[in-house]
Image (cartoon, rainbow over all chains, first blue to last red):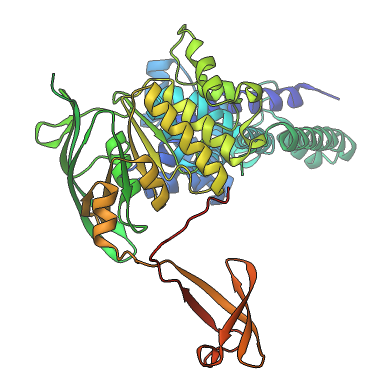
Amino acid sequence: MDFEPLWLTFKLASLTTLILFGLALPLAYWLAYGTFRGRALVEAVIGMPLVLPPSVLGFYLLLAFSPSYAFGAWVEATLGLRLVFSFQGLVVASVIYSLPFMVYPLQAGLQALPVSLREASYTLGKSAWTTFFKVLLPNCKSAIMTAIVLTFAHTVGEFGVVLMIGGNIPGVTKVASVAIYNEVEALDYSAANQYALVLFVITFVVLLIVYSINNRLFRVRYPS
Amino acid sequence: MSVTHLDIQLCHALRTAAGPVSMEVAFCIEQGSIMALTGPSGAGKSTLLRLIAGLLKPESGRISWGEEVWLDTSKKVFRSPQERKTGLVFQDYALFPHLTVRQNVAFSLQKGESDVRVDELLREVELTQLADQKPYQLSGGQQQRVALARALVRQPSLLLLDEPLSALDRSMRQRLQDYLLALHHSHKLTILLVTHDLSEIFRLTDQVIELDNGTILRQGTPEEVFADTYPVADSPALYGEVLSCRSERDHVVVQALIDRRIHKLRLPLDRAADLYPGCSFVLRYSMDAPLLEVIR
């Protein structure tokens, strides 16, 4: 069995999760506590990947990333990056595609915290920054775990978007889900089964471990 | 030397159950005194505390502590809660669930600041033994003391308490009142507390403000506010419920429930004529020479 697609899948999912975590923290904070106009618009945009067929998203990303259009040309000219049919392009697309899976649980976790925790920290002289890292985040570890796992799992399961903008280049964009599709198309069911089984087992074990840890370690116990 | 005051003039829109109300208050608190804020729920008491602490911005107003101006909307001055030296004890205590008692109390220390005061305060509220427990392992009264100690570490000039003792039973309440008075003296604190409890007001405070619908109804010493405005009975009365009536030759024996105890009362026939099992009654004594016995 060729392990490259599996390796690529996990590399893509890990990178996407890492980038999204950094990106989603301020976004979730802003959505949870900010008072601003146009909030509905921002939430709708973030939520789009939840309901849109991946092929639609992939199609527009393909157009956007393509060097024959303005954005793709600009990225190539300024950053020297080509985002179509490249691994970097896959990462960018995955970040967009999995955004709600990271933002929503974090936002919900922050909103579930009693307002008085934040206010207590402020009256004790701590800045919003310190409050966020010393009070808010430690009390939504469980939401953080959920967000990370959902994002990772969702990226592992990506297919439509990858196929649209990444194609099928071995070692570059041929991730496990695409490899399975290829093997089935070539009627090599046993090769397809090997990929599928590995994904199936690993995903299940990861979820199992995470949720059993989540319930035991990260439950916040409020005084009654 | 003149006495420092907390001067407060505020206008703020309140959303109450009865619709929007504009809160307009002006009063001052003398440094070192204890003032109670009372009134029906929705009167704006908690909002007022949050405005003073800087957690809310009013529409207009001015708050100053002596020479320090905390808020002046006409000059666009707004000191953040971090910059006002207030300690706020929340109704739900707002202890940080992930930190131990000691870490909660030490939370407000700056990096490298000595933690001697943390140990002192823990000793003062008798929590040294529980320093390594998490908040959920504590009783209500213990959580309350942690919240108090935590609010005092920064040595605030003003301590704001939002119904701090309302969730506790009576004996715990009295002990905590003693703690509060002791801390008030040892730290020379100025305290503003929201409370509904009359005995707490008389026991702790020098001044009372009664709020309703965002405005100050009455203000003064507890005696002035309550003794003059509420009817004071000149003879104490006991309220009870008749359990059974039994006629004997020239009188009626009534078994009645008064203050959760069963009492036997002998009444002349004419006085018992209206009574029936289940009815409520008031028992009055004439009080020419009241005799009070302390029972605990």
